[in-house]
Length: 332
Image (tube, rainbow, N blue to C red; front, side, top):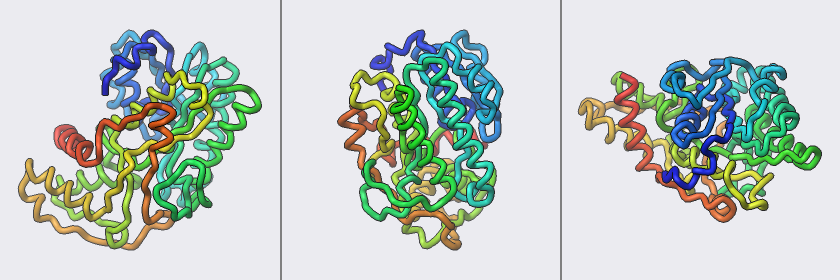
């Protein structure tokens, strides 16, 4: 990614909520390189100290430990900020099914706190992590922003409510927002541990331990897996675009291609077998389909290309190779 196109962010004040998390820490890293004055807010519920450790000695980085469920914390974090990149959330469909109340408190109440704080602080633009789960039971492929179905999980409901609140805050208060519907993001800093770990780092860790990954279902479910660099690019485009018509919209943040889980596991085995040839012979196991999972996910990225000049730098296979190399070096 060519960072020179984002030079306008130099010395701008940018708040990244969830800054110690997977996507948030990658955003912080890139913004620091550009020369923005970065503030990260995180409560370490799913983020990690080690993700921000390299930034703590940087002059243009400030960290606030706090929870978006507390309005005063949000107000403190938004003070004097030019832009907000709101990544803080409790992800995971299964987590929301097991505990819908906490998911709602963080993803809806916390989101509303951040909108109020950003509005009151006069933030110029509020960019937030939306989700492909919003498409729900819509079977149409590819997914087009204006056509959604009914949500299939509490998590999906919370992310759709975010979009409704963001639209309302523009119409009611004039707060400019952009929502980015993330499609199965993966890459460096993604946590392989815990009950709700994403499939790619989880499978990588299992292969490295010579354990058999378990695919939910027969492996034909497919996803538009999106490498982290594409997601960082979309966030930066969203806060720098000068196209007024691009504001107060939601955009698919994806590659526009899909890979099923059987293909994914074979590619992971191929990449990791370079380091440990035993991995090539590990068998894959199958379990039942997960509640709330949609069978297929594929994004149209035409709207992002037209309005934001988005051009993915990594197709899935390129991103997966970079990611597996990073995992091997960092997850041992």
